[in-house]
Amino acid sequence: MDIKQKLTVRRAGHQDYEGVVSINTDLYNGLDYIPTCYHTLIDNPNIYGYVAELDGICVSIYISHWSV
Image (cartoon, rainbow, N blue to C red):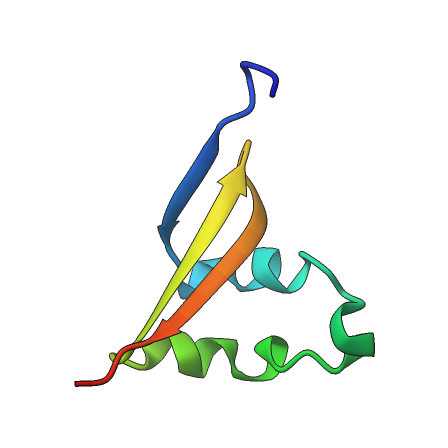
């Protein structure tokens, strides 16, 4: 890995929508559910989303549902 590249992992927010959906536009042959429900997931207090950025570009998302 080039020294200039830096991977950052942080909580996902509404501002990450464009980066998240641009990761792979052909995922599931265009039938990925994330573009249609991303904001609902982010607003849900039981769902934790994280994005990974490499040099400021979103390269991954992780979504976890927590229930007690």
